[in-house]
Amino acid sequence: MAVFAENPVLKLENLGKRYGADRPPVFERLNLELMSGAYVAIMGESGVGKSTLLNLLAGLDEADAGRVLLEGMDLASLGDDERTLLRRRSVGFVFQAFHVLPYLTVEQNVALPLELLGVDKSERAARIAGMLHAVGLGAAARRYPRELSGGEVQRIAIARALVHRPRLVLADEPTGNLDPRTAAQTLALLRDQIKANAGAGILITHSKAAADTADRIYVLDAQGLAPLVTAP
Image 1: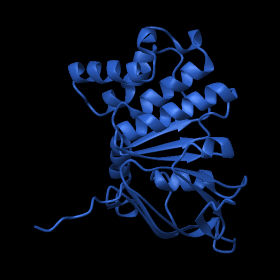
Image 2 (image 1 turned 180 degrees about the vertical axis):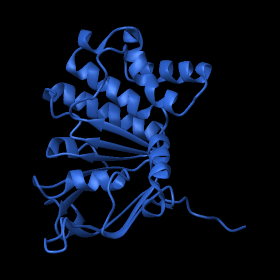
Image 3 (image 1 turned 90 degrees about the horizontal axis):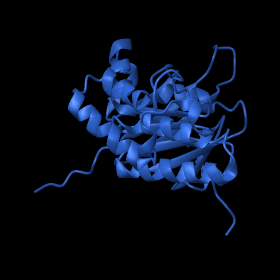
């Protein structure tokens, strides 16, 4: 019996982006393949295109060269509505600025992705309770973000990003507003939850300490994406 390898969660093939034909590329020839359970960090100087790359991975922008394959689907081949549905189902976002809704309780914030996907009420309640327990906020379900610390609010963002069990998690400087101790705890939580959900994750960061929590570190520049090589 033939054995087939698992398909990558995410695959970049010679990806390139430029803004205007008369301008140099933001980057080109980006290649990357992530399988389930992979968690990588991408570093790079300011202005090198990290935010542009995230937009391409999420299908919010279109590449000028190459392809982004998410769960085997070429994002460029999908219409706007199809990309929106794929993003809603298969991608989770964690941002530096948290982006939780202050007028909703913790559990109501975490419920949002499930409501958008039409998950039924009983399953929704079970998933929310399980995720809040996993991130240590089970006792805070009925509280509001303003009543919590910065680290706790970032945990809401992580729970919301993961509750619908996305195949790909994109984290953009998720601990930039946190103190070092809370940042370390938050990064460990993010990593553990991505792997527990058998997804793949990309951490965008300027911090080498944050990047060191990933399985592998890549450096982005105009020439491409290369593994970080450190001295022995």
